[in-house]
Amino acid sequence: MTQREDLRDLQARLADRLSQARTQTAVGASWLAVKISDRNFLLPLSQSGEVVGWSGVEPVPYTKPWMLGVTSIRGILLTVVDLARMLGLPVARSEQVFAEASVVALNPMMGVNAALFVEDLGGLRGIADFQHSSDAAPDAPEFFGALYTTTTGEQWQELNLQLLANAPDFLDITA
Image (tube, rainbow, N blue to C red; front, side, top):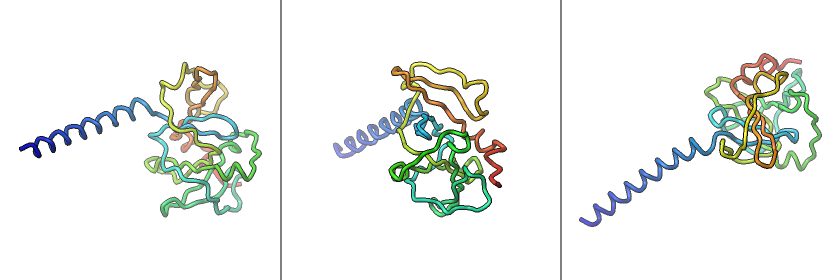
C-alpha cells in the first residue's frame, strides 16, 4: 500500500513541477537576447527556432551583401542573413567574433527558411528584466518592436521576426 501512495505522491509532485515550469517559462522568459553589431536585440521565443553555433555557410552568388549564404540545420537548408549589414550597421568582425557567433533560425511555422547571424547570445529575458519600455523610433524599420531599458540604462530593441520575414527587403536577396 505504501508503494502505491509513494507512486501517487511522486506523480503529484511531477505534475506540480511541470505546471510550475510551464508557468515560469510563459511568464519568466519571453525573448532570446542577442548582440548584433554591438547592439542589443530581443528575439521573441515564439518566433525563434533552433540556435546553433556558427560553422560557416556556403556562399550564394549574385545575392545582396547581407545574405551570408546557406547552411543546413538538421537537414533543412536555411538562408543566413547578416541583419547588421541589412540595417546598415557598422560591421567589423574578427576571427574571435566568428568563433563565438551563432545562427538563430526563424520559427518554421513562419514558412521562411531563414536564420540570423548573431555575434553573441545573451540568454533569456522576460519583462521583469526591464525597468520600462517605449515605442520604436518613428523612422525605425517596421519590424522593430518596443525598446526596453534595464535598471542600468542598457537598451534592448525587440525584433518582430514575423514582420521581418515578410519585409520586402528581407525576401528580395538578389543583387
